Length: 346
Ligand code: YSA
Image (cartoon, rainbow, N blue to C red; front, side, top):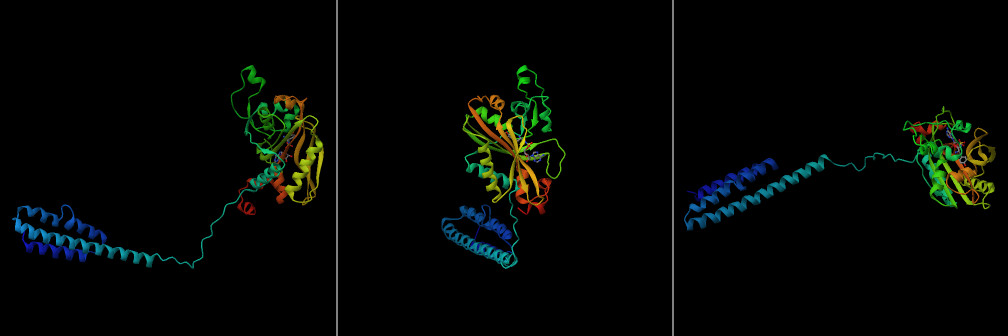
């Protein structure tokens, strides 16, 4: 039968064990041993049922006192361990606020992206909207609709990456050739846009172009163009408007006095056609930067517009070449060289 002496023995055994505990883990083990559901204190409570009512009252009171006492010293010991852990962490993991910081490398935009953003900004200030088109194009949009039919010698101007795909089968597919290619210029977006939007209109189209050609300091097989298209009612727009827009662009883009010239040229989708050259001060040479002209009536027709009602100019500028002139970059291949010494300058 449980008596007072057993209780006092249990108290001093548990007290000693708790005081001597060396870690939080040991403490948790002792909690379960003495105060847990199946712990020794609870076992004593269960044994009370067999005692007489007087003894039950007397011993029951003492058990509760011992339980409370053990809980209190356990909580104190746990707090002690926590304090010790904090002290240890503070002494071992001290932060030296005088140590020099580690420099965080900041990313920045690629020079071609910077130039693209600036070009868009300038044209937007002149009322042009920015429009995008697909890089994988059909033969129809890249060539036929721009008045460059199959076997036309002008196709040689654009060495093309043709894509493997289904050859056109039906007469309709053959008539509107759906052979796929990587677009050689941004001009197909002129047609795509005019098919869906009624003039008057002003758009610029930045984007990647691809040509199957050998690379050199001013030619890449993958480069960027910005297409421009402005269409107004017939008689309300002329080459003079084109010249004024381009002059304004060049003035803002190069932020200064830059020599520019218009040279007669040939594109099947413009009549008359010209090229715009800019004088490169460092080499004392003219650099060809823009191809342009007045939109050919056949282009309007291909896009479903009546050339008797509409007139306009279009141009395609080489973004990489503009960037080369602006930042005095001698070789176009540097843009994709992934050379950090080059990229960090921008
Ligand atoms: C002409 C008349 C229009 O109504 C509209 C657009 C055009 C431009 C035409 N689509 C075109 O692509 N003309 S172009 O072959 O002379 O290229 C235009 C510009 O793209 C060039 O002046 C040059 O700056 C750039 N370019 C062409 N091939 C390149 C290149 N840049 C880098 N690498 C190449 N391989």
